[in-house]
Image 1 (tube, rainbow, N blue to C red):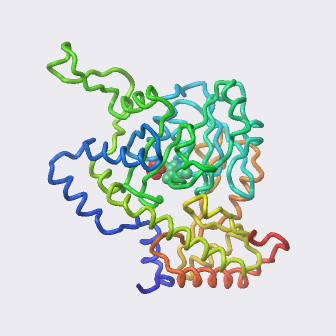
Image 2 (cartoon, rainbow, N blue to C red; image 1 turned 90 degrees about the horizontal axis):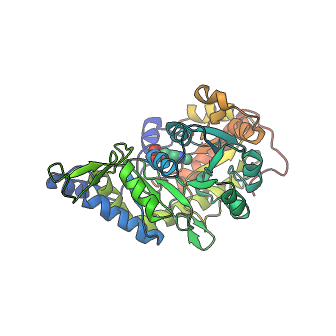
Image 3 (cartoon, protein in one colour; image 1 turned 30 degrees about the horizontal axis):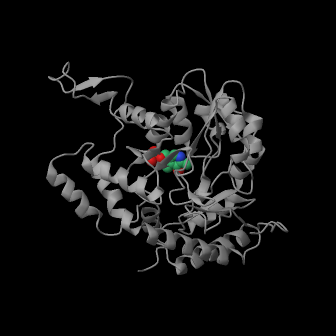
Length: 388
Ligand SMILES: *Cc1c(COP(=O)(O)O)cnc(C)c1O
C-alpha cells in the first residue's frame, strides 16, 4: 500500500474512516434482504456477542455512544437540579448527554500524566447536588475510582463510565464494562470496533437493563396482555427513538471476529510510535499501557502546539486536536471553572494519525515530520519531560 503522507485528502479520508475487514458489506446486504431495518434479532445477536465478550449478563444496544450516555444517566434518575461531575477534557458528546437529561455538568480537572480524572480530583469537585460521576477513559486508559467508591455510594452518587475509547481495555483482571459499574461504549466510525454508528450500555442490574430497553424504544413495551391486543404495545414511560438498527449491528458483528487482530495491530502501532517518539526532544507522549488497553489515540504534548499543528497540517499530515476543553466552549461557559491542568493540556495536545490503515513506515514519516516541525518552529526541548 502506498503511503498517504503528503496526500492530505487521502490522509483525511483514512483518519475519519472506519477500518473494515471485508465482510461488513455482505453482512449489511443480508440484513437488507430481510426487509427489516429496525431493531431486529441481529441487534440482539450483537448485544449477546458483546455481553459474551465482556462476560456480563446484559448489554443494551443503542444508536450511538451519546445515546448510551444519555439513557444510562436517565436510567439512574439523573434530571433537572442534579449535577454530574465530568472532566472538561472529553468529546462534547459527554457534556451534551448530561445536558439532555436536564442536569448540569460539574467540570473537574485531570491528572496531566493520564488526562483522566483521579479519585482526589473527583472528591474535590463533588457537591451536595452531585448525583453521578462520569469518568472518561481517555485514549483507552482505565480510571480507578476504587478508593472513593464507598464514599460516593453513601452520598447517592453513581459512577457512569464513558468508555467510548476503551472497548477491550481492562481494569486489573477484568475488562472495562465487566467491573460492575454502569459503562457506556461507542461503536462510532473511528472507535476500536465500529457499527458505523452505535453504542451500548452495560447496566448494573436487570432493572436498569429493562429501563434502558424501554427508553430506547419510545417508552414502548411490547405486551402480550389482553387489554392492548389490538395495538400489541403499551407506552409505559418516557422514551426516545434510540434503538440500534440491525443494519448497524450487522457491521459490528462482522467486525467482532477480528477484534483480536484489531487489538494486536493497535498495540503494535502504538509501540512503534512510542519507539520513534523516544528519539524526539520537546514532546511528551501521553502514555498508555498497551498491555492493559487497546490504544485508541496517539497524543503528544508540545509547548508550541499551535505552530507545530499548523506546520504539520501544511505538510499534509493528518494531525488533530482532541479535545478543546469543554468548559471553554461557548455553549458550556456557564459551568466554567478554574481547571489549570485541563487548560494546559488543551493548549499543548496534538493527536497524531492513529488508525489501522497505518504502517510502521507511515509512523516513521509522521514522527520525522513532527521532528522537522519542532525544529522549524524553534520549539525548546523541555528537560526531563520527554516521553516516559
Ligand atoms: C465518540 C465519543 C462519544 C460519543 O459516541 P458517539 O457514538 O459518537 O455518539 C462520547 N465520548 C467520547 C469520549 C467519545 O470519544
